[in-house]
Length: 430
Image 1 (cartoon, helix red, strand yellow):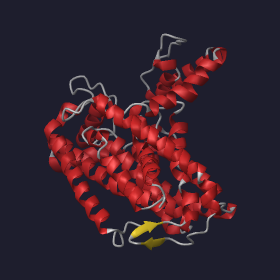
Image 2: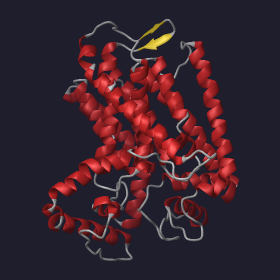
Image 3: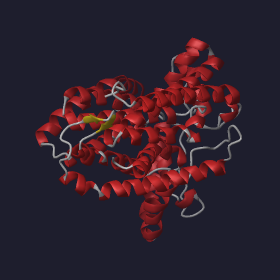
């Protein structure tokens, strides 16, 4: 699964060397720019990154997970990043802990490069995986994102790992892969709550693979139990603190309300949101406001809002790179050109793949995974069945972000899909 023993030596050692250089470059970038890449300020505490850092400070000082207000217990965020930051601060100190966290993100970003390679190799061939890994390493947001203190880099790692494990789980139909999938699914959800909806991808794959209902049930139960075991400390904590079952967060109301305004312009079809100092009640007020706007404004302009939700929001999710501050003198416009090129090539690669599905389904050229001339090649049946998972990942991102705010930060973790499809377009199946 993660073996490189039978791989072509030129691909294997080139990938090792480039990945090492990539990791070193991530570290140098972190050390050079430091807090330059903070999106907020410590004085104002006006953005997610500095609030996460303050949350980690508060964990060290009081043992309380907070977010907006220090010392006030919160369920606004998932606990993953705050406790990860607190761990590094505990070991290295409050200032050096942030530096160590950035280096840690660089390590996980490098591991993501290898997993992208493995996914490309598994679905198509070694050359596709290798080129996709190269595309990923020269994509500047991959380096820049390791410098910021947000959930994106770690979430992306767990996402690509979850996709890779899922490919094996669906194909092999063995409990061990579903168990590991449940573990990674749970950990990823502790960083990004939308990951809880990942099983929709597996359901699509089960239907594609023509799983029996009994198989869906038994594998679904096992995976859910593992997921529940990972999540249970969070559930218990929330019940003790808030007296109710909170599976993820209570924070959807605000982004749902903001995301309901066309182009995020609150001057059009505005409705005043009630205010409360209680975060749970405030979330309910946001949802109440959104419901009112749906019933009184959106129904009167259905085409405008349909265009906003179904077309324009998806464009905002992927159209621009997640690169908000320039590093090493690399202009945002230059990165944007490469980003759009990846989108175009990836889209055409996905179309090419989906058009070739029928041919793969009818082909029995390879019955089993084989190594041919030191080049890993999956069977045509595996390619046909499992290659769809990448398009399902994009659909997953689209569906889970549709009701809320959509912008490049949230679309960034899925860029590896476009890279693999773009590589498939260029390299082909061979």
